[in-house]
Amino acid sequence: MPAEIPPTQQLQIQLNIDDAMAQGLYVNMAMLNHNETEFVIDFIYVQPQVPKATVRARVINSPKHMKRLLAALQENVAKYEAQFGKIDVTGPSPVGLGIH
Image (cartoon, rainbow, N blue to C red; front, side):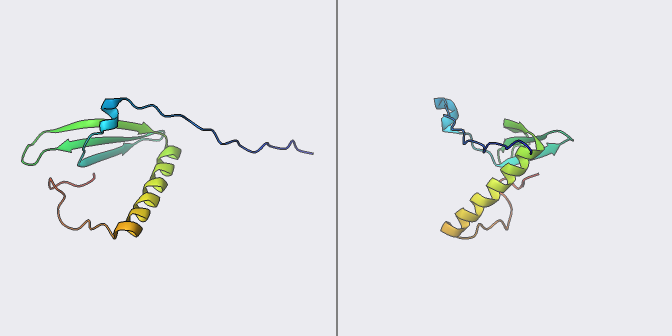
């Protein structure tokens, strides 16, 4: 008889965030790249009429985590639209650039 696998326990993680990180950073563009083992998302701020941009954060994660993140984003956008209405993405982005 095969050994019984115990049920997984829910792990509670206490998050710490310093004051600077808690303020957040505004970004208006993202670039996404991947290879076989990881996804890289650069979150970028582009000022209108300025030909130079700044990467404000880079997030690197595994393909499994990326798929979970995608599902979480889709779920949260659906909840947002259910509460506040459909998000209109027509027309140019604030800086004339979109998510790349």
